[in-house]
Length: 631
Image (tube, rainbow, N blue to C red; front, side, top):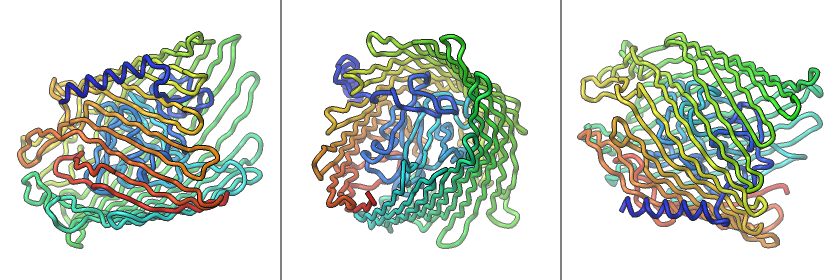
């Protein structure tokens, strides 16, 4: 079955490549990327694989949670541990979940303790875009970007005042609401939004016990103000609060038990920045001085009694300067970066408990990124030096080049990069002395990888497609050794090797129907053995119907995840999780100029599936809602 499906995928890939009606990512002429160079550059100057979803794409996906939107991005696999509110991980090109850097309005959202971002709680109603850069990005973005970068950005008002209100209810006792008001004024803009989500959930253990519910509340304030024609201020503050119930394996047989466990969490992402743009002779200069805060607090409960809490705070400051100039027909761009990070962490279980700890970690970095454009040719070079108070200094670099073939409206590009990932606090110092102890001798993980891709524009820009081949090699991979007691973290003595093919694209059929899709084939092995939670096949298709002159519109999403391996922690044996297909859709009716009614569905085929062994997931869900807008 797996081989036949892979053959069909390859046939589909060939069709996409050869057909002028191939699905693609759309005309890149006006698309701007930030993750490619830390500063905005045109898409045609990027040499890495980057996907950008704008507000219309996000709305077409129809999901409240960012993780489900990201299923549309090639190379990204979602691991969802049950119902809403349960741990949700994103893996890029077979890398671990803590190898992906996540930025929310420029603030690092990776948890200071685990080093990864839990997408379970990212239910945002105010996103303007999602940008995903895949492959080793440490030379630009530091240690958490060994496998890629995901950038979530708040929507900004264009002109005047925008106001909206949305209410929704449906299956699993779900109630959701959000409100937003945003406005521009003579020298700036401001946006205030808030949302609340509650669900009775499902019984994640699947034993027929009580349901595991979830509540989520988010408030976001963002804005900018121009002091004069040169200097401007920007700031944002996002407050996230959640309560999540879950089941746990209390008898250590590898299966969940229906128990009364819950987690209360509160996270703040905040940023303040001073920016300046000016010219100095023939140079255009851009400056950014920023302070960013990630403050995370989590407390766990069993039968209403606290079992421990953790406090993690990351304070980051950086100064970044970019110069742009031209010599003859050659355009240059050079960015310099100075950065300081400080992580302050505190874990508490009970007086005298061995898991109580309060370490502080500091790191400094200096980096540079250079870009050159000469006609059809583009070149990018990046290098970074990280100095850490617990590990040896690390140097990473990245290089890429691209050449446009105007005669066929195509472009070839290639890049090579290195990445580094430092061990997390729990890996170094442990968190449960009775069963897991830390390993302070751990070494950072290191990765190197390359890719080559072709981007093709068709039908006067109405359609394009992209195909990429990539390879990556990870050494000193950190894993949990369950062969000893208590278990501990170790560096692997063998290599983790990953390779694959990504296809993506979009097509604006006639102004009334548009589509975008992706397909990924992945091999991810550790010492020749397939790694867990890395599906070998991923595919996604989103079709958006939005005819002019009609009050009705709609969208359809299809997301396929192939077979994948996981671990049965009762026997510590490898098991195979079945492939599955999730189908979603929505129908929208514009009742008036200010009122829209809609119905949407998730998992419409009522697929039974698991992303993590033993964790049951929701079946079919149907929801009704309304949106009020001021125009």
